[in-house]
Image (cartoon, rainbow, N blue to C red; front, side):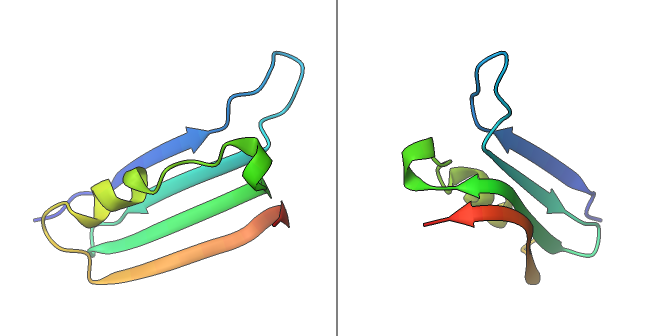
Length: 77
C-alpha cells in the first residue's frame, strides 16, 4: 500500500528578500505525482535540479499519472 509523501524546495533568498521560486512535489496514496511550481522561474535565479522530481518518480510503487500546477508562476524565461 502506498503512502502520501511531499517535498518542498525553495530558492535561497536573503533575510529581507522573498524567495523567487518554489517547487513542491507531492506523491498521493493513489500513485499520482503532483508537481507545483510558483514564483519567478528565470535562469538567473539558480533554478532547482530535476532530481527532486525524479526521486519521486523512481519510488515504489510506480507513478501512474503526473499532474503539473503552474498557476502560481509569476514570471519565466
